Length: 108
Image (cartoon, rainbow, N blue to C red):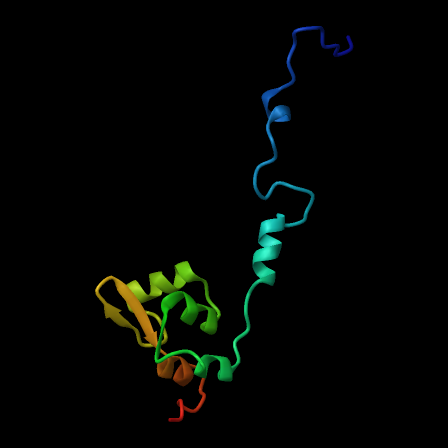
């Protein structure tokens, strides 16, 4: 007997729902592709041009990790650069970043 849907019968729920995140034709979602292309590459001169200290998200970008991972590593004490806790703020000395990158310290 053929499967004929009469009036009033609805399509299955899964067929009506939009695709879930990551469930697509093999490509990444556009937001993920754009996020990856926005990663910045830091030169030693750009790092030296920062002030004496910088915030943790900027330091994470210099090191090449994400903001959330940087805060997690800073909280556990496993971050590979030294940090300063100023109340609730977490800052990173630029000299520590340059030392991590094995670059000579800031002149001046």
